Structures are given as structure tokens and as C-alpha cells.
Length: 411
Image 1 (cartoon, one colour):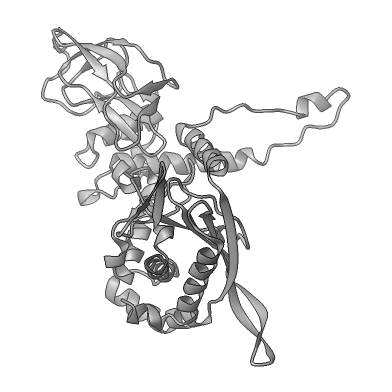
Image 2 (cartoon, rainbow, N blue to C red; image 1 turned 60 degrees about the vertical axis):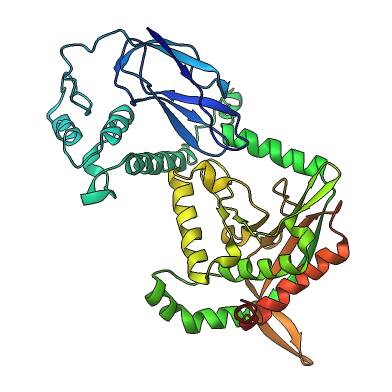
């Protein structure tokens, strides 16, 4: 009996993917539930498993090709029996048939240790990773797939940095063309989607940006005084994003059109506050969402943001983490940005951009003093948000950050 391998449903608004890599090859015997192929979407990567045991009879779609939900990736011959040489009860990958050098023996032994998950063993073998060098974060120090992938990413980063410093060729006659090298890279699914969405936002909205500056003295002083006790109690540092998240929620309640979206000729006002927090990852920007952020404490906000950052970099964010959102906060200041114009995260109609805090001279009570100042930017869709609303929204945030105690009084 032949069973088709189908591209599954991948979450809200995700209808396309790219075949990142086949984990099995034609002719391989596979167990029911065993991962066959990894798909890359604009949000997350996911594995498609075998619905039944059998032999991978045919691969219809090669690596790097695009597919849609419902497409046939290949087929399994479910009538084929498992080879006698492979014990049916084993879920661990086989040892390599030959070991060319004594140095490879520790690797083979490590692949069979109960302290490595079967999936991690398979990924390590495919990526030629020495598991003795990988630190396990799973139960009992077990090495997981995520641990192996993070190790590989670090190795790739080191290699890329080294590649940025190529040895300069000795100038010779006719060597100019040889030194003017180019490299062509295919955009990842996520990068292509980011490019498409940014272009769509700039072409399909009436986007404007208003700016202001905020004196961060009170927030920074509060953090200095309370951070040690806060960290001792909650196990996490008190950052600035939680202050701006709370301030944005207050401003969204005062100016509800910035927490809306346009659907045809209708304005859909949302009475809940799912705040997207833009996070930079190696494959591109992602925006995981703080659900019902108005119900979260400062500590809960900080913990979720830290978790988002960790999982964005190890590729373990889920589609649910990235779904929806009513308003977005992005902080270019962590990369050193002094001022920028954030682009709307459709279908949202507002996004707040934070920037680097710099000490600047300002006038206070007729005197020039030095204060830590941050420029902030609010981009908004002028089709439903008037300039007055946008300016007042940003002033509302400025006033709350100037006096952070008000955040506590307003809940």
C-alpha cells in the first residue's frame, strides 16, 4: 500500500513553505512517527513525520523547492518490511559501519549514550558534530536537538566571521577581475516573506511617523534602586521594555484606534492588548506576541521577552507564539540605532520604535543639565489614525515614562 506524504496545515495564515532538507533518502526504512522532511516557513521550521512504517519509496519535491498546504512531498510503501539487520525496537541511529581513525570512536560511543535524544543523535551525525563538545540542557543533562543546532549555528557564525577577513591577494597584472568576487545566495523563506510584507506595508498603507524625546532619568533611577531586589524576587533583571509595554497599553486604552485594524470599509477596534515584541534572529526579524499583556506584571513581561529572545535564536518559536498581535514595539537601540522610522507590522496600524539612550544637554528651569534621553518614533496608518491622535499617543507614553510611578497607579 502506498501512502502519500502531504504538506500539513502549518498554522494561521501560513500556506506556503520551502523544503529545507530531507532527513531520509529514497529506499530508507522508516518507523511510524519518524521525521522524514523538514519544512521552512516564514515563521518557524517544522518536521513532517511518517504516518506508518515502511520504505520511503519516492521523493517528489527536492530541497529548496516551494510547496503549499496539501501538496504531495513523496510516498511511503507501507507493505515493505523492516530489514532484519535493523532491530525493530531500536529508536537510535546505527553506528557508523567503519571508523577510519581512533578519534572517531568517542563520537560513535556518544551517539549511543542514553544522555542523547535519538533526534539529536541523527542531527549530530548528519552535521558531523562531535557530541562530546555539546553541552546538554535537557533532563539529566541530556543533549537535545536544539543543543546540537545551537552548536552548529555557533560554528557557522565563527566560520562566517573568519570569511569576512579574507587574505588579500598579491597585486599582479590582470588580478583585478579575480579580486572582484560575487556570491549569490537564495533568500530564505523567512527573508522573502519579510521583504514582501515590508514592501506591502509601504505600498498599501498611508504610513506616517511622528517623533518625540523622553527623559529616561526616572526609569533608570528606579531600575538602579529596585533592580537587585527585583532580580532576587523574580529571577530576572528589570529592563526598560516592560515600562514601555505598560505605557503603550495605557495609551492604547486612551486612543483605541491605534489598537485596531482595517477590514474592507470597516474599522475593527480590539478590546484586548496583544503586544508584539520585535526580536532580531539570525534568519531575520520575528515578532512573538505577549498575549493579554494588560494582565501581565512587570516580571511576567520581562520573563516572556527573555524566553522569546532565547527561542528566536535557537529556532524553537512556534506558530502560536507569532500569531496575531494588535500593536508592536521594536527596539533598535539594542543595536545602537539613534533614530529610525519603524515600518508597520500588517494588519496593525501602529508600531512604536525605541532607540539608544544617550546623555544630552537639556534645558530645565532655565539651566542646561545633562540627562539620559531616548528618541522614540510612532509609525501609524493615517487612513484611520489622525496626526493629532498619533502625537497625543506619543505624548501620553512620554508622560508615563517621565513619571513611572503613574504606571503602577494606572494598574
